[in-house]
Image 1 (cartoon, rainbow, N blue to C red):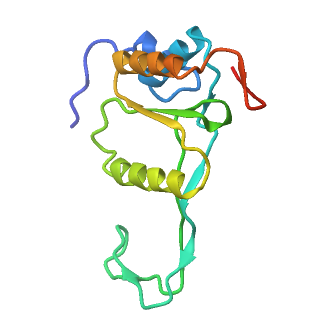
Image 2: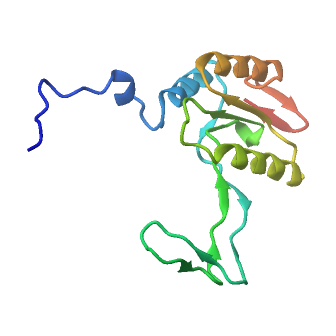
Length: 162
């Protein structure tokens, strides 16, 4: 027989309830600070394909969690590797990725390195990049963005930054 829990159920903190479209409190803090400093941004709208989908032509058998035997994946489509940054400035001029406490994001370092390589290989001007794990680091990133001239209305080579 299960033991019943006594007392009232735990309530979610106000921070958890009022995140809106953001996935974490750190992301909400970043969005609030960017807005406060009048830096235009988009949230999780830019998707980069780091490795296109492909077919592996050789024999390919892999383990699965639901079956005891190996699964035959010969000639099956291998899904692409994609990356969606948290905050992107106008025209992709800067990117802020927020990473708070992340015990289960063991693939992020590899995905980030692939993203860096993708940016270099694209032939486009590379953006200013920031990975922030707390409010202080977000504030530092904003100071640097301001030093680089972002957030001010200015015209440079026919483009406006806001």
